[in-house]
Image (tube, rainbow over all chains, first blue to last red; front, side):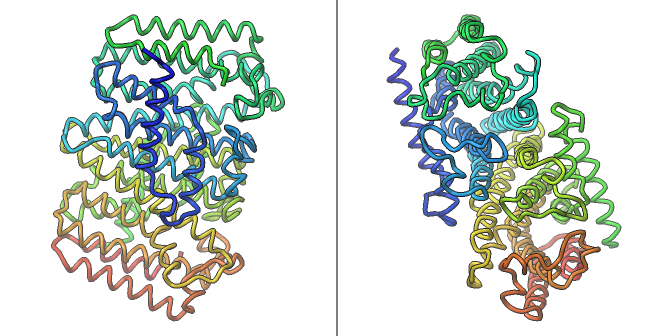
Length: 296
Length: 296
């Protein structure tokens, strides 16, 4: 199994599908559709949708059946970045080496482009169902889980607490709460959506859920570590901005060496989860190693 | 049929259901849930969800079957008001006689409360399905239509064009585009959701769709008229602010008498649509008259 090749192949499939699913850039009103597409095609790694496709394949499913859901999850991720970058939130000017959405289109359009991507994601998820009735029932379950992961008990909860905790001293529990919600919930939903659409058994779904939770934690800790020790040119964004903003991060709380150890432990736990059940887990295992070793 | 009684009864049912469906105000993080509830329970007329319940009943369905969808549509309406009121958009300090969400909770939390309400609406819509498979298929169709009405081809498109057109001279076509998208789309989706969940025939669905389109137009024109000639105390918001902002409205474009005539014509067209098919349309007919005659 050649992971870089697999990642390239899946990312190309996802990019093509996003281009097909999204209304064209000249759909009315063009300003909105340009703004939506600007951030969707701003060079994201497509990690979450790749996880959806890989999870579907790992349990013997077809990646194409999981493609609309995978794209919907990427749209939700993109909306969350546009809103996070707003002046009222993290006030970031650059993302992935490009000016953030509101720097290009203004705050009003950036807020609305985010709203539109979030809404369109659910329209796309509702298309997953196909025409047969058992498929509709699965599509609804997947949609419900993705909405729960993105909503007030998931991603938005994490973001609210993250903002409310800036510059404050918080405990390890709050730090974990912020990250399991802000990042972990959507990773978990991405993997579970793929597993469900791929026809996972209850045992497979449970093991893949544990895998996803550890993977999300590993991703967030490495993200924090890269902000401290990473290369701005590779990352395409300013580094050391967490520290400037007194953000609560794993390296700030535990120190860099302990944070690195925690990221490795999470990757190991993700790999261990895969050994609890049957499936074709080579790609998912390689992804865990890729995430803990990444430099961007 | 006593309309004021019917409206009170439905609004009470919707308020109770919203209170039950939404996470409690002290759910973590409380700041988010307080902010969400602040705007949901800020004294809205519940017109859209009432239309959903009334449409379900008009075609012989049970209003309780349409209740989660009705509440979801009200949450989408509420999110759109919170985001519309933001400084980057309409910059309004008061709504329904109370300080707007961002005046109370700050811009970051207001944006996130809106995001959370929008996301939660889809979680609620995905719960509509019940356990039987034909119900799942209907729930998916309803969800898809509501998402389309709220998204980049619906409400958000109208809002983008509204903002982009402020202070500019636009044609009648653009004025109609803004209002059919910003207001009309969600009215239409509210009625169609109720009709579908109530088991409407294709003829009933088509007639109710025409009813809803005319009703939405009538509502928007009367809204514009009330901004010109209404009573701020009754409305709970500043009047004549459209004019200050050089908003494109029906009275500004056509003059007040012609706008009043247009609102009446739309109400008449809504009533005519109801005569095209069979059903128990007393409530829907009374609602059209109520909307064209309202003073708040």
